[in-house]
Image (cartoon, rainbow, N blue to C red; front, side, top):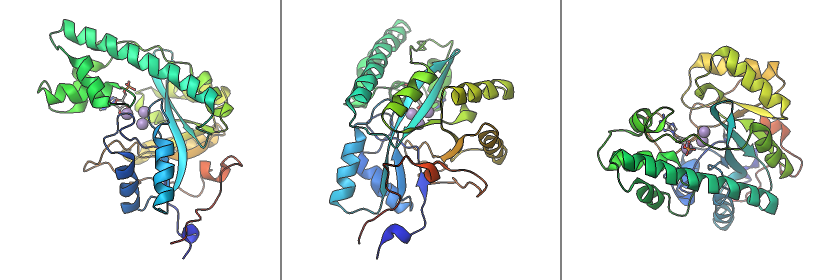
Length: 294
Ligand code: AMP
Ligand code: MN
Ligand code: MN
Ligand code: MN
């Protein structure tokens, strides 16, 4: 039996322990199988190191999963941290890797400053602990949050963000990310598509969200992530309308970091047929079928 005739279930936004996801590449792929996701993008923060590992695991185990190369690039627009997901690019491109290395350096420098700021507030050793949790992967604020939960200063990760890590709080360090236009350029130069990640999560008013989408579109952006796992139906409909209004493709992604009762790979990502999905416009170098013999 060829799996190419199986209905496709897409999830184009997910994380592994190469950034702030909790699952290894292998465990993420096993979970995708369990959840019936057969087109999966791994989109770690500012790094693609999970991609070759995932490709070789899929190949050696003949898994019926089409892996889409992905990355989630941190950018700054006005005073907001905006995430741009790249899909379907050549992750072996050395220019892209040099460019992503500068983001990883920024992450490192910011992590040191976060550690210093927390130390001034009597939370010692947070930098070292966050680095330990990140291992060889990209260090993120989520690692600091996990540490602060581990030492009992908060019950949950969202609580840590609220209390310590968001703008105006003691552990917040303004970031020096690249611009939206640069991120789009990096992704395009490597042959991929640029997607505005989780547009509903930046806490922007309708007016500002439109401004963001316009800037993204005018900078050459390709698509909006219209469907997320945790999202109101009203938000999804609104994003679908914006995608068509601004001439952008529709992408779907759980932004999976680890399983919870309300979050899983492939969960609640339906979009109506009226959408113009990214997968109908994959760049030409991407095969259109999953050709895995069982
Ligand atoms: P960074 O890219 O280092 O700024 O870290 C951002 C990451 O932290 C996001 O990708 C989320 O995984 C996580 N994060 C950000 N805000 C929150 C929040 N309020 N609650 C839980 N996790 C969050
Ligand atoms: Mn994250
Ligand atoms: Mn994000
Ligand atoms: Mn993400």
